[in-house]
Structures are given as structure tokens and as C-alpha cells.
Amino acid sequence: MGTERTSARSVVFAPLDPHSRAETVVRRLTDAITFGLLTDAEQLPSEADLAAQFGVSRVTVREALVALRQQNLVETRRGRGGGSFVRAPAVRDEVNTRLTELSLPTVRDTADHYAAIAGTAARLAAQRADAADILRIEEVDADTSGPLHRMERAYHLEVAAVAQSARLAREEVRFATELGTLLWSPVLPGGDCAYDPHADHRAITAAIAAGDGDLARKLTEDHLERAVDRLVNLHLTLIEQ
Image (cartoon, rainbow, N blue to C red; front, top):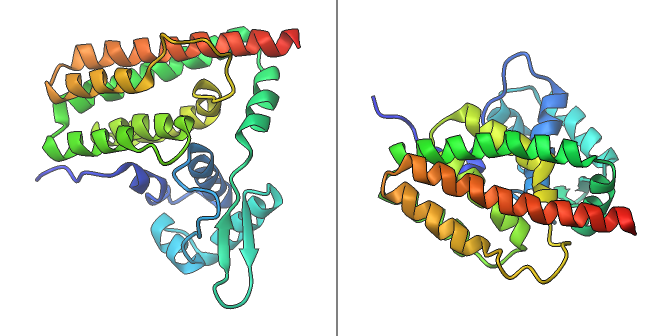
């Protein structure tokens, strides 16, 4: 029996563990909003559809939406054309606030753990990707319609989806939510001509397409290390200010 392939977006709406409740729905949708998989002003599926996709009751979904509204991540509009709509947080404010609350050792430790997750996903993707998977990864990297930090996170989640490991994909979402807005922040010190994320992605994708898992992993870890160096510089700048 062949393994069912999943897109990055489908990871968000995968059925929950039967013991999960509204808190898990809140976390899953918060991850998706922060991650950029659900964009600002996008309409969410109906309560009935969300309940069916998550495998929970409509009451649970309704509780989750109330919590998201309280966090200003979702707004509900009444009447014709109404429903629940995403309210994406301002990236600059979020980055500055979150980063000043973290110590440099915490940033480094979290980044090391994230690199292990993303690197393993790239290695497995090299073993399991087919031509359609490679095309999908390339399309994510080529998308310039949104900000760079959303493209970065979407790229790594797509690689994790191609790795065909639901657990890895969930971990990718979790770490990208915890660190991704910071790691791929557009609010960074200038003058960094050596950092070219698209060139890094092309090299990683080429290694995946060639089936070279070790190289794909190393290139991913190097890519993340460069991003961490930029994040450390931003942290030091904010602390000085």
C-alpha cells in the first residue's frame, strides 16, 4: 500500500488526537496563523467543517474560536458574507517583544533543536520525494507574493510534508511557531549581503531531488545557522537600544 502524500497546508487540519480538546484546536490554528499558512483576512472554514476536519465536536470548535477572538487572532462577522476571519499579528511588534524576552542561550538552544528537526526532514525528503514533490517545493520558494518570513516557514514545512512524517511535520510547525517569526524576521540589521535564502533553498531542493539525504540535511542546518547568526545580531541590537 502506498503512503498517502500530504501537502503542507493539510498538516494544519489533520484530525486531532481523540483526547484533545479546544486548547489543541487553538494551538493548531494559532500555529497556522503565525506560520502564515492562514493569511490575514482569510475566512476560516465553517464550524461544521472545522469540526469534521479536526475530528471534534462543534462545541469544541466554538470554544476554540472564542479563545482566538480573545487573542485578537480571529474576528467574527455577522450577516451575509459573515464568518470567522484571520487577523494576523503585526510581525515587527511581535518580533521585538518576543526577542527581548529571550536570552541568547535560549535562542541558541531552541535553534539547535529546530535545526535537528528541519535537517532530519530534509534528509527523509531526499529519500522519499518524487517529481511532483520537488515541483511543489520549488513553487513555494518561487512565491514572492508575500513577505520573506512566510515563504521561509512555508518552504520548510513543505519539505517536512514531503518527508511523509506527520510527527516531523507537527514538530516543524511547533518550532517554526516558537522561533520561526524570529528566525526569519524581516526586522534585521542591514548589510547582510551573504545571506541569500533563495540560493540556499535551491541548493537544498537540488540535493533532495538528487536523493542525497546527507547533503540536504547539512545544507539545511547551514541555512538555519546563518539565520541564527542574523537573529543574534538583532537580539544584541535590541538589548543595546
